Length: 125
Image 1 (cartoon, helix red, strand yellow):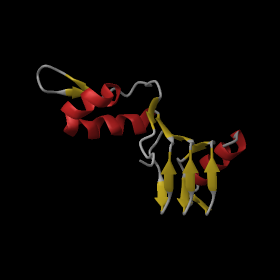
Image 2: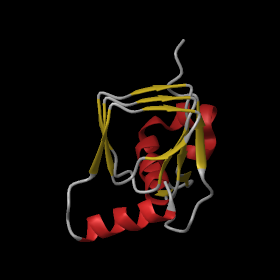
Image 3: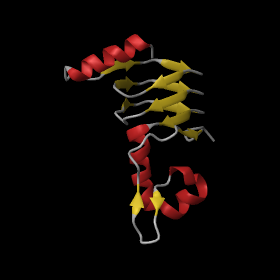
Image 4: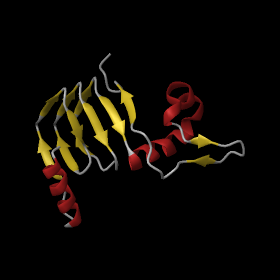
């Protein structure tokens, strides 16, 4: 997205408009920000997929060989979700787990986190 695209997206969200729909597009080796858009029947091959809010609307989309980068709110939601898969997530992707404390509580900090990358989660086998 260009700076102008981000400005337009912000303006549309302020006005309460529906997300801008992108249909039948194929992305190959591109960086794509998902937040604030509706992707319909789109394909993403070997792309870097970005989200900071998790404001994602995907309808019949396909991902292959992509890297997912989560920032800010999206990262914290993933940490909360991963609370319920503690043993598995700590072994596989410890950096995606919330902070677990000895008393059984967890912390998910609202401070800016470094981007989280999830390489190849949707790669074909």
